[in-house]
Length: 329
Ligand code: 13P
Ligand code: SF4
Image: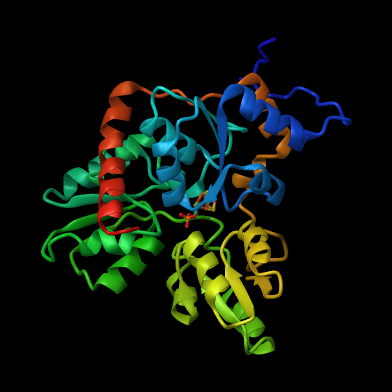
């Protein structure tokens, strides 16, 4: 049977309630020589069944070196697309094709090409959270783990376009002291939802807690953070720190690994500026263990890509991976 995924974007086949999904997923992985790469923003059960859980840099590095025939990417579309760019001969599958990214969607290729044309002589550095079309217009891709180091590796007088995240871009510009760096006006809906007033109130209630923030957050949040870093950097910081309590300003999925790594420490999700759980990424959270199972079973939905775009997009990602290896990242 080949289920039709066009209407819904995922395999909507009912699964027997008696099936042990963990065991079945393990069995299918082995049978098909498949691996599951999962981002820290995935639900805990998906992280627990994954072969590798990481930040965007770690996940690209894992995709680049895998010998598996199938990569199931438990993350969002641009992540699975990046794996496909790096592994064109492998089958890359994503549990839900609708798992997009507000940040990637804030940078459309035609507009970005026009912006680029207005700024000749600028080197384009794009955050990995963008579409393959934007990567194809990019000189060097970066992640939140290596953006500062990549910019620092360039000559001081090099003019730069940084896209698509204005918050990460502003943070990199501040840390590197670059004045000749212009920013695309994009942002992540999850990292812009935090309330500074509520965070400050929490900090007063927990005076010994440290604020850990992802650089996709707005500058006023980063300015009061004790530590700013990628998801992996935040995790490592919390693990090694002598501090026992943390307020975490990034997507809530990361708390699963934080609590696994440091079960005696307290992790408090930074509150959003409204009453709902808006610091859950609605795109990441479209993936479920049931969809992971069906995706592996039917090998659908699969990522396909125009080869001309793929080849162009690969250049900037390979430059990032090479630079990261040279920089020991
Ligand atoms: P990192 O895990 O690379 O820090 O990225 C965070 C993110 O927003 C991914 O969508
Ligand atoms: Fe995109 Fe933000 Fe969700 Fe990450 S958390 S996938 S940047 S919308």
